[in-house]
Image 1 (cartoon, rainbow, N blue to C red):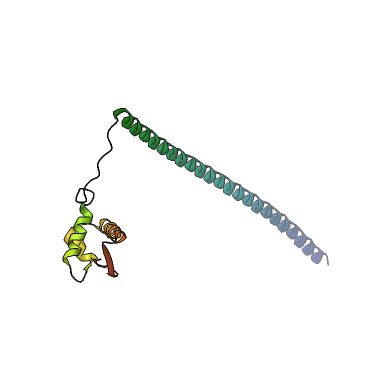
Image 2 (image 1 turned 90 degrees about the horizontal axis):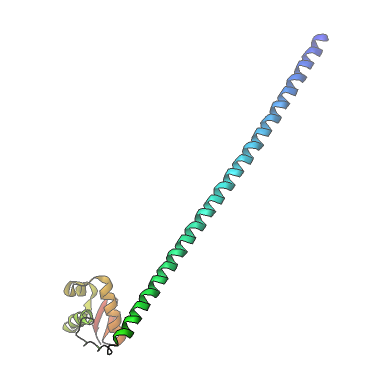
Length: 155
């Protein structure tokens, strides 16, 4: 029986030691969790600060841009007042502003059944943006109409 009591005592001591080790591990886990939470909080605060600084920088740049525009407008206004020019004359339809529209209308007028956008690009040498703007303006003025998608004809 003494042998059995010794074994029970040894087991009890071993259990107590394991319990202490488990407690210390729990404490370490809690400490690590707190540390990770604190790090995450610091990172979030730093990111928030960085975003605020970037927003402030963008706002300052926008404000600077607005003040430049205002200054430019003021300068232009001062020049007009100082020189007292007569109002500018309107340009003729074939002038510099109308050349794109004139080119497009010339190609459309030559075609009987209508002309596609691809043909207009080749014949006028305009890029897609210029061509679409010209087609929109001419259609708005009633000078041409769309036969089908991408095909235009004189109105």
